[in-house]
Image (cartoon, rainbow, N blue to C red; front, side, top):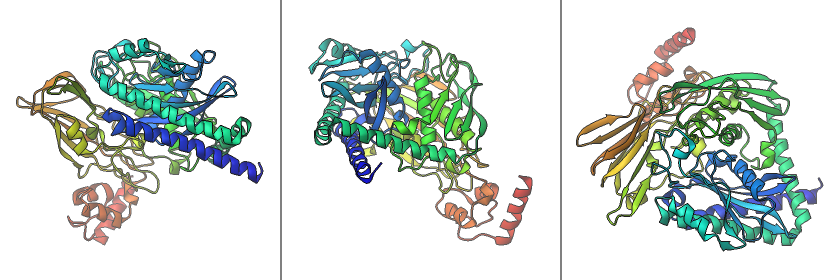
Length: 580
């Protein structure tokens, strides 16, 4: 590739990236539901279609969980309509067993034509505030099959030749509890795709279709070379790890997720043979979801300046035996798969890679204590709250860095809604939202502290609460401690209910509260190797107490972290190393 080709590839690649980012900004600024315009629980991307395969060519930073899942959804939709596409068509889909993850995640796809053929496809994948079914919000812990997860939308045309299919649109609306939000959100997704179309048309007019496609090939090739170079630096071998799901909300416990990372030259295959059979509860993971979380694990090991496109994906393959918890048969329920067992899939992939690329792994996963609440405003309109603030915490450490922020990296594209806006949009008050002392997994680099959150409701409501990450909290890496477990409590004038696994359709009166204790992240490396001055800083900042410093790090210090006893510290650390 000569210098002019290289420059053209960078210009075209940057233009596609900018188009995807403008799509993201359009959704944020025009959507109606808080989960879109406040929490940013969506992802935008642009695809092309070559030799029967939809290929990712650009993607804006968004909800990391959607990074690869968006690819399978587009492929499935285009397989349905590849011979029946026209300018102005818009496809909508959310089927978990045909390229989807869980039903709340919908994709909107718009074909962009060049030389009278559908060539490019701007796409928005987003989590809808509601998706029908028995439970408001789309998380039904009592689900026993896919139909109890919500209303499945197979690939359908929402617009045909530029005209809205009102029958399809009305059908989708009729199965949603927050229709006014949904209308605005669908318009925002459609508008984002139209914005991308204008930018793509302008680019093709400037460079021509052939040169644009050549530049895309160069960008994909560049990304693939970068990813392969990283994988090739890992020693060949088979690296096995396992982790466990606490339960499936239907009585099964300690559900194994096993993974062997098979590194061969510049390729890596993740083989989930040995994972538990599919379960009755809604923690099963569709194949697309399993592939997506493997990709998230890989992405956390690769330099952040590598373009996220099809080349990123090519060196990685996934083996997920059918009928297991990581690739269940239809119609097993999968409603919680983007949390559990998605978290365990990424976790076990990273645990396997820690044996061949220890300095690349960490930043462990989100095992969320979910609590969805629904009610009605004074005028009778329904509302659904995801209680986002209660999910924050759990960010793990990596080589060279402590855990940071509130969201773990799997949720980095999601923005924590402002408390003030949250209290304006919902009848609630957030009374507490703060770090908890002594709640981070210890390590050479420690996890982020856990977070305590208390949400008080100003009106009657119904809450479904689902606890995870207790029996098997987020894991530490390379000799570090795991993060502490989560906790969840519902309280009202009649007393408190500690959620042990699940509380289904629990009625809370005005004045009741949900209290979350989100466990902190796991650490990286042996705690005894953490420099004394960093432990003292943690004491001073009230991340840990002096007692915890002595117990976990072998640092004997005063309660304010101002000074350590060098002799006592050296002796304590020598004893801890000997015991280890």
